Image 1 (cartoon, rainbow, N blue to C red):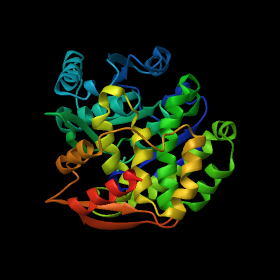
Image 2 (cartoon, rainbow, N blue to C red; image 1 turned 30 degrees about the vertical axis):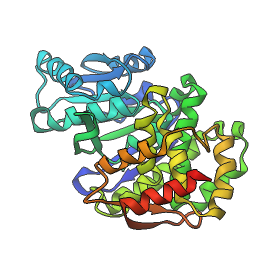
Image 3 (cartoon, helix red, strand yellow; image 1 turned 45 degrees about the vertical axis):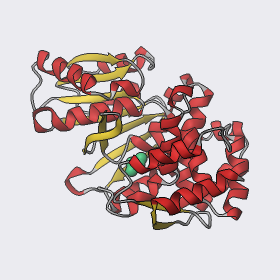
Length: 341
Ligand code: GLY
């Protein structure tokens, strides 16, 4: 078991990483009050029931899985449940699920009665290595992802690696893409580990890979909680990755798969020579058949693109990064240049 302490002044909290933690959540969370447990229909029901058993009074709300729940409708369902339960400012919300559940439940917690306690139990590898910590909460609105939200830190995060046993392999690869991302910008040793181990050895070592990834995120968030500078490195591979994700929505490409593709043009030739075999081993894509112009059109409308410029993260050497402000046309030229070959 590992414990990280995110030092964010009065918003500080612990992240506990280990096996069989769900059944002892009340050791870490104060559940002796009214608790709204938010989950979705893709998450095994026994996970939310395990939390519910430890609460004084609880209600489980299960949403439809997928980005569609990060909506005004999703918010409304949760606020209604809380009002029905007569929850007040001393009560709390527990999210049990992946990034969608965490983002939505966190935003509800940030806004209900101007903010109540929020605990997060991420159950996908993608949310365990990244979105469950750092306090980004949001819903989608008007066709724009994460456009309405708040920075609102959880009170505690419980990463129970046993929940990964029920996760399909493609979802494991989806999460590992974010671990690769963290290692490329910030941790040569973690990258070398992902390079050296076989796929099966990686699956047997997820707890230490999650811990190493979260230590990177911890450092970044402690330096720059509200993404004024350093935190932008967590978006390595994401500007074009998000564009691919939006364009391939119907084909159902996963976030990590799009980030894998998005990292390639932003890496030097020597980094790419080592990155491509790692991505292939993790069953992540290294090429794709998409309409680059259409995807780049999306980049121009991305909320990360301010006044015609993007903050592009480059990795020329493993474990190091450079943030460069590029005009949209330079960024598009760079992406086209890579995918044209
Ligand atoms: N997932 C990127 C961030 O938390 O900043």
